Structure formats: structure tokens, C-alpha cells
Amino acid sequence: MKNKKVIVAKFGGTSLACAENIRLVAEIIKSDPARNIIIVSAPGKRTRADIKVTDLLLGKHIELVMERFRDITDELGVDVDLAFDYENRLPDYVGSRGEYLMAKIMAAYLGFKFVEIGSGVRFETNTVIPGFYVVDKNGVVKTLGRGGSDVSGAIVADKVNADVYENWTDVDGIFDRDPNRHADAMLHEKLTYDEAREIINRGARVLHPRTLQFVEPKNIPIHIKNTFNPTGKGTIIG
Ligand code: ADP
Ligand code: ASP
Ligand code: MG
Image 1: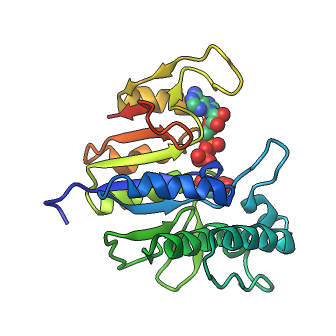
Image 2: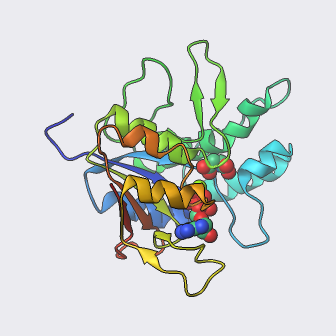
């Protein structure tokens, strides 16, 4: 897998919140053939007042989850079995179904293979991987904590020796302060791992705090990019 350029690309919840956004994501993926190992979050908020699919699942609002996914599959015209068992299941399992179904849908839409992070798994090109959880050797689902899809992407980037780990989100990159709260926040175009760690540890939820530890040993750069402004420079860490 190492003679060709390998991009691992993770897309966050807002980027996958509805069919319209998912189409934008597919365009981004198709615009670079090297961008072919994809990690997805569960659909996030479509509006400020909306509820993330992960929160609906943890609140056991299964009907609302089904409605959201049905809207997405109908609009995209993909045929994916949305049924899953939620009774007598542990919260980690139920909470992980947003990423599970999103990855199934994305794989069907792109014509890629669906693969989960688990022991002995090999990640190939043209793969969609659900973020947020791993499957242990007994087949038990364990979630990685809220915002954990960033960590999933970093785990995969390490495993495949990616040239770059792209983290596609809903802002132009890492700013000195939350750009959604401070209109005058300034974008950092380049950060060292240490500088990024400091900003993240100060509470910027743009990257999960455990993301860097998986890419730093091999010096894999993280490129934060905005799904809604793909030509923007973004932030390069490393
Ligand atoms: P995703 O669903 O793509 O993982 P998140 O909501 O987890 O996205 O993270 C992106 C959000 O992080 C932005 O919408 C922004 O409001 C927030 N944020 C907080 N601090 C910062 C910062 N310093 N730079 C960029 N974004 C920040
Ligand atoms: N969907 C999960 C969450 O809302 C994980 C993620 O989006 O990174 O926390
Ligand atoms: Mg996040």
C-alpha cells in the first residue's frame, strides 16, 4: 500500500447531517483518487436546535433515528438495511449505531467496502470505516468517548501509514479561539503537534485530545479542512 499516496479522510457530524451535505462529502472524496480510506461520524445537527443522532440513540429515541436515516437513504437513493437490535443491548452498542449506519450508507453511495476497526482487520483502499467505536476480539463494541471519531481516523492513519490524515469539519481549521463564538478569531494555517496539543487541551473541541498520540510517532500530518469551504487552506498540524 506504500508506493501510492494514501489519504485517510474523516468527516464529522455536520458534514454528514443530511443528504445534501453527504453529496458534498462524496464530491470531495471523488475529487482526489488518493482520498479513498474514509472514516465517518454519525449525522450531527442540521440546525442549531437540532439533535445529533448519537444523542438520539443514547436517549433511546430510536424512531427519530430511523426517520433521520430513512430521509437520508430516500434522498440519496441507496438501499441499506437500517434495522438494528437496541433492546437488551449495552449503551456503547446502541450509541455506536449512528456511525455504523452512516458508514453502511456512505459505502453504498460511493460503491466502497464497509470495514470496522477490530483486531486483525486490514484496511484497504475504497473503504468506509465507522468512527467512534472499535470491536474487540470477542465482538463487543466499545466507544471511544464523545467526539471519538477523530481518534478512529488517527488509528487508521497510523495503521495504513497514511501520507496525511485529513479531518473534515464545519470550520476552516484551528483558530486561536472558537470561531463560532468569536467573530475575530484567527486561523492557524500551520501548527506543530505541541502547539495543537496546547490549543486542544485548553478545550477547543475541534479535535479529540487523544487524536495526536496516534499520528505523532510516525509524523503523519493532520490537515483540518472545511467541508463547506473545500478550497480553503485549512490547518496543517505536524
Ligand atoms: P465535527 O463534528 O466535524 O467533529 P466538532 O463540532 O467536533 O466537529 O468540532 C468543530 C467545532 O469546534 C467548530 O464548529 C467550532 O465551533 C469548535 N471549536 C472550538 N474551539 C475551536 C477552535 N479553537 N478552532 C476551531 N474550532 C473550534
Ligand atoms: N458521533 C459521536 C459523538 O457525537 C462521535 C463523533 O462524532 O466524533 O460524539
Ligand atoms: Mg468532533
